[in-house]
Image 1 (tube, rainbow, N blue to C red):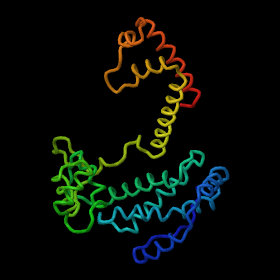
Image 2 (tube, rainbow, N blue to C red; image 1 turned 135 degrees about the vertical axis):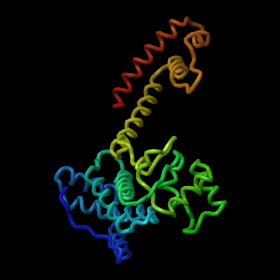
Image 3 (cartoon, rainbow, N blue to C red; image 1 turned 180 degrees about the vertical axis):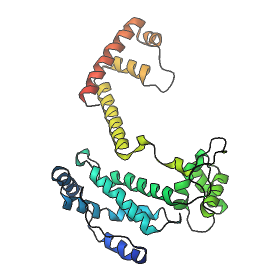
Length: 283
């Protein structure tokens, strides 16, 4: 996608920048789809620019959640804008998903990478539970002051961690800088901030594809079950869709008053029919 001029966030005039981006109109879904198609089909730079400009306010809102890491907000916004442009370039208007839902992953990923690249830390080795705290604690605090006992307990309960882990992480975030990677002599199940980077399979477009694929499978499964007679549906549900204690062929044979072999035959026929329905539905 060809480069184009955008408003630039500058620390000395950040409020002016925010006022500017808030004046750009929010697009309707129809407008968004039309612009995205122009970008995809004609490589229309003006269409790309409109899509980016209409979502700059989203970047500002997300970047505010990362204030307090010792990095200028203007830089966080600028990095988030890079993520937004990447999202616009990769956005598929035919998926039926709004751009903002797709872009938020790219914006956050770019900001996270910037923080980890620039946050000069001496050392931080955290437990698994504290991985949740690293990027959530600051946004959950109700003020800039030190956490009180009640707020500490509330945050710990909400994130499913221990209260002393909340206190420890707050101390580290407000104290000295720490190292991105753990020291060689660290023992046990420890994690440094470098571990917070998303895995390859968490890349936004892949995550979106997985979600859509799972939704198709669920839809196909419902259609396939609906196409079965009541006895076949009962057998499939009892044999394959129970979270635990699935029924045996003999259990169902006793229930329906037939042989176990007959139950196996009904099951095999029903599964074959379901596979055809699921395949036809695109799952």
